[in-house]
Image (cartoon, rainbow over all chains, first blue to last red):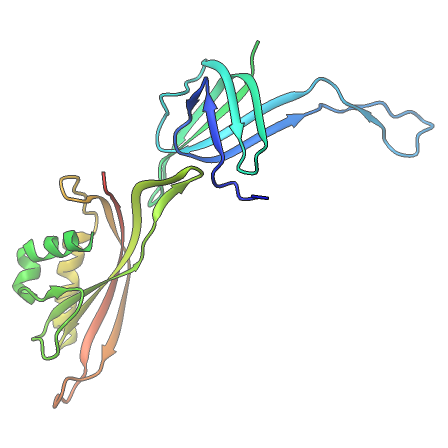
Length: 112
Length: 132
């Protein structure tokens, strides 16, 4: 089984998201504490899930995504697994520092 | 990339005024002093999950040889003045930036029959360049 992240890809609205350096897909169940006095341990139930995907690409802003753009964000991990959701780009941050490459971080969240 | 750096040094009047055309990846036995040799210490591309970009980040070492400390330092000063902060997108490959990273003095074995050693100063530069 291939476990290296190298070879993983990201597309937004069917367009490849350029030179992707880092991918992070987070699903947060927003746990609700439903513990009562009779419980030995804290007990939780899962609320409505939050999903967020952050990507880092090498270089400046990619033409494939801009803040406000909506579409299907699809991640194909190198081990064969995948993620997909209809998402909107909510944040872009481009940065560069001495003797390092320019990188752009994107944040995507689910959209209607 | 190293040939571009060599061309830059040879084209600089101060450098060539000191070492002539003795700027190369190697030196011949008996070469007149001072002279300069260049070595690529490390090199690699900026990579991403899907492959590699066309941008490289290299470390080169420029060894400046002389028959006195003062002569060697004159060559070092000329090399640093020419290369530190160099950016030239018209060359092939394109030089994005050259930065001085380290200077280290050393003493080399004396030439045959000489009473004193050769002086050598190693100057390290970080070179960012791209092939497109």
